[in-house]
Image (cartoon, rainbow, N blue to C red; front, side):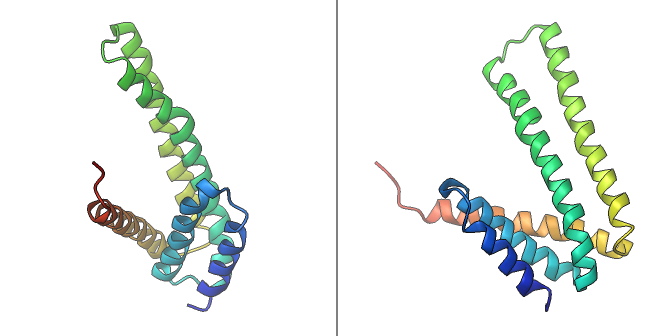
Length: 150
């Protein structure tokens, strides 16, 4: 818990410089950091080593999602009647992107094994899943509670 406050202050200090359209993303990221730190019960030494590794993983997977998967999904949506040759090429791109994601996860686990116990790595997966579930629930509630437009 003692590590939680400095981490939150660190994240919020940078969020002040975020673009206006990035404020929500920065708030979610700060909440995720706080949630994971609390769930893993990281010591100050562990947190210092954990977060650079985890942030690099997040940057890698975000890049794959934004550059590779987004393009593939757009192509699938915009061209429902692909030829077999086009579909094969798109499928290969999809498999390459999925492999990049898998390799990033393997690297994350291997790198984290050097700085935190395996049990905390298992807890990380559970914490990520729980955070994502809570985030989706909150978004669902926001959508249901917002005023309807005519």
